[in-house]
Amino acid sequence: MCRLVLATLAFLVPLSGTAHAEDIVAGVSDKIRVRVGTPLVARGPAGDIADNWFTEIALPGGRFRGFTAGGVTWVIDGHHPYEMSGPGTAVLKAGPPGSPTACGQWIQHVELVG
Image 1 (cartoon, rainbow, N blue to C red):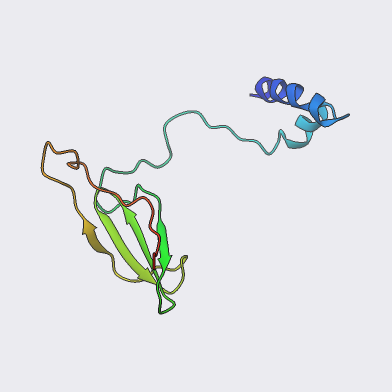
Image 2: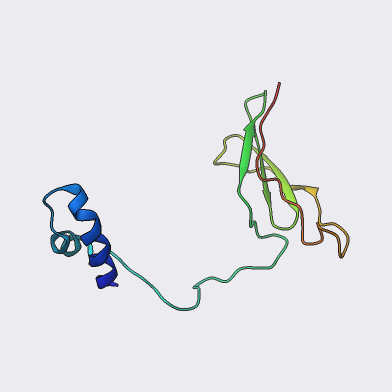
């Protein structure tokens, strides 16, 4: 790890001026952590775990509507983009077995038009 950091910095430092790679690594090496192994948290597959971007729009009344998905796309309303406290309502479900949407359908992005 330290050699990789040194090699990367040795390449970048000449571009930045008079700093030395060893000086830079000495200042940050105690703050860098790399963990190798199995994940600490393994999720899914499950219908209630979001595995898609969260996208939202502002509604005319000042509230917000957000969309997220985990095989099923859910719509959730809230007072702020960071506070979506309304109940989730399924708006797109997985298609029939063998279809292109058998594993689910996801809304990636929304925009309010008009």
